[in-house]
Image (cartoon, rainbow, N blue to C red; front, top):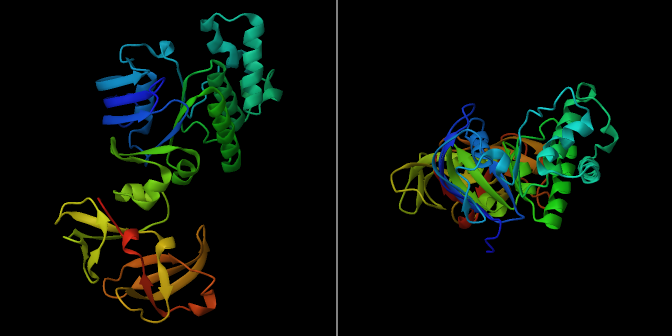
Amino acid sequence: MDSANALELQYLAGADGRSAPVGDVTFTVPAGSSLAVLGPPQSGKTSLLRLIAGFGSTVGGRVLFNGHDLARVSPHKRPFSFLGSQDALFPHMNVAGNVAYGLKAQGLGRSESQRRVADALDLVGAAHLESAAPEALTRAERQKVALARSLAIEPLVLLLDEALTALDPLEAARVMTILSRLQRKVALTLIFSTTDGMAAMAQADAIAVLSAGRMIQWGEPGELYDRPDHAVTARLTGPVNLLAGRASRHGIEIAGLGDITAHGNVAQGNMAALALRPDRIDLHLKAPEGFAFEGEIERVAFSNLGLTAHIQLAGPGERIAARVDTRRLQSDDLPEGRRVWCTFAPDDARLVRV
């Protein structure tokens, strides 16, 4: 991996005083790539991004950029731009003035400053707002202007902390697509925090999952979907069934279901969960050969997975969801109370920490 302009955290710990602290976070983000910091509320996402930007109180670890430790470098001297959910536009300046504000410290000439402002506003789809006053803007427009201000200074790393929450999902996705194109053009590194696992999966090259201030998993989107090693990761990265039990020699022991083969890294005897994605479960109307979960159909409904069956398992009384393969089965084949059997490939049964 080329280390030029790579961002590396080494056991970073601290807080910004306004959100949950983080501890011992370590990862490397190559230049020009995108990282999603994914986690539930109060997991430390905001503290992490603000510590990278130079705000808050760092109590341990290092922030390395291009091999240099920025721990004692003030925020305005770091080649980063941070944007939070609050746009913080100056009310006494129009949109162009707000976007140009960060350029003053760069000593640019008037024509270059005007070009940067125009390009940034055009990039986020807000060129028509150049002369508007902040109070005349919608919240979504204000976030676009704030993003333009962050981009105008041409940072090497752009940090977005829930910075597009005012935009509707389609518009937010459009803006992220624009940023992805910009990344390829100028090697901009993008780090964004979110509670939306689907957005993280769709828009990031890699994902860092945080919970209670700790990074519990890191990986590419497909890896985290296929091989979560924590229940939080499994929940955040897509629909999942989680069945509680204890780690056993070969997988997990679940009351009423027995000892089930599953892959994961949980010490034998510890509490754990079996994670099964609904799209990895096959439904059968007759008992198949080999191992299967037996249950009864409670209802069938459409979801983001397509036609989905909700099943009460025999024995433990647990409920699971399974995507219906409509090439083989239809809703009429699965009336309420219908007995069914659920099978899955051994590699799709994940043993996860809880």
